[in-house]
Picture: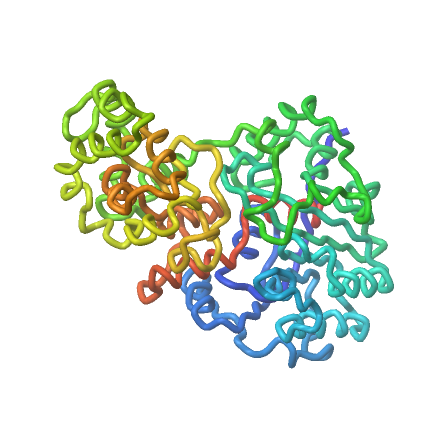
Length: 477
C-alpha cells in the first residue's frame, strides 16, 4: 500500500518561536507543506532584519516570556515550531539548565500549554545534543504527555542526508491525540538516524513529499544503500542509548563513525560558491570567486600557478621529508612568486590570519573542495580560531601531507606556518557557502548592512533545512 502525504484542505496555521533568520520557515517551504506562518517571534534585531529581507514580514520582537494563553490563542495555531536558546545546555553556557535565565521563556511557553482551551496539535523543538539530559527536557516531556501528546525524539546530522557537514542536533516531535504519527511504534523513543523515512519508504512511499524531487531521490538512495551495513538496533529508549552514540553536548565533538563509513556524502566542492551556483542556476555569486577554483583546478590537473608540474612540486617538497625544515624552505621558494597574485582583493576578508596559523594551526580542521565532511560552524566562526568550524585549502592540494606535517610540529618555525596561508590558499568558508551547507535555498540573501561576522554568527545559530524539512514532513504526514 502506498503511503502519501495527506494535505489539509485549509493551510495549517503555524507559529514560529525563536525564528532567527527563518530556518524553520524555509524548512516548511522545502517540505512542500500547505501552511502559513501566522506569526514569528524573535528578540534579535539583526536576525529580524534578515527574516524580513527574505519573507517581507518582520517577526514580533517582544519578549516571548510576556506572552499569555489568551494572546496565543488568538492566532488559532495548529503548530508550534521552536528553536529555543541552546546556551543553558552547553559547556560554554555552564550547563545551568533551567536555572539559566535564557531558558525562562521556553519554560513559560510550556507552562502556558495546559492553560489553553485549544492548544496546538503539532510541536517541533530543535536544540543542541545534551538537551535530552536536561531538567528542561524532563519538564517538556512531563507537560506534553499529561496534555495527551504522543512524542518522538531524534538526534540527526546533515551527514545522514548526504551533506558533507557534521552538525548533529536534537529534535523533539509531538502530536496531540487522537492524531498519531505515521510510525507509532517509535513513540517515546530517541533515535539517532532518520528511521521515520526508512519505515515509510519500506511501506511504499514512492512520490516525493518535497519541493525538490532530487532531494527525495537522494534520500531514498542513501537509505536503501546503507540499510545492509547497519549492525545496531535502530530503536532505543532515551535511557538506553549509548553515550558514545550520542556524543557530548558540543556538536563538533560528536562521534559519528557509522555515518562516515556508511554514507557517501557529496563533496564540499558542490557547496562552494561557483560550483553551487552552476548547479542551482543561481546568479548569487561572490565577485571573482573563479579565483579559488582556478587554483583548485590547476592542482587537480597537476599544475600550480607558477607553472611547475605536480611531480616537480612533490619532489621539491617531499624529497627530504625527514628533514622537514628543508622541505618547507623548498616549497616556500616555489610559491613566493605566487603569493601576491593569489591574495586578491576580492578575497581579503576570507584569508585566515597568519598569526592564527602561527599560534593555533595545529588545532585547525582543514578541508579541501573534494573533502566529504567539514566541522560544525558556530556563531564564533571568524572570531575565534579553535573549534568554530573548518578552513578551506584551495591551492597545491596535492601537497597536503606537507601541510599537516608542518601544523603537527609544535616546534615548527613561525615563518613556516605563516607561509601556509599563501602556499595553500587557506581561507574561511564564505557566508553563502555556510548557508549552502545548511541547505538554505539560492534565493536566501542577507541585507547589505549585515557584516560578515554578523552573518557568521546568525548562521551559527541557525539549523539544517534539509534535516528539519524531512522532520516537518513526517510530523504533518
